[in-house]
Image 1: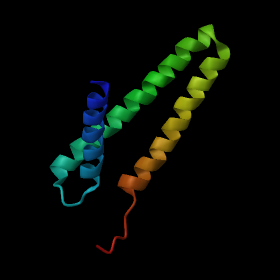
Image 2: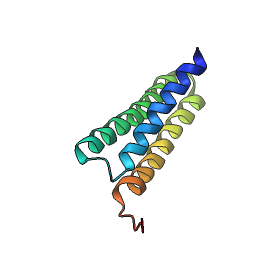
Image 3: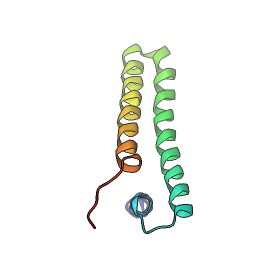
Length: 93
């Protein structure tokens, strides 16, 4: 059951990411998909940041590691978002 759930979620997420990149899909479908993907990743990063802040009070090293991980994910996510959606691509297709 776990494998089936993981397969369905992965299929939905990968399909959403690929649809949001496609120029052939209308803008009124692409833009909400991009917002959904961004909110999902912001939520995950927010949960990791919150866990880091909460655990910082109990365990100093774990809190620092979780906060650093969240900041690293945030920086890498912003750079990936800029490269994927904001940069002009010179495709010859």
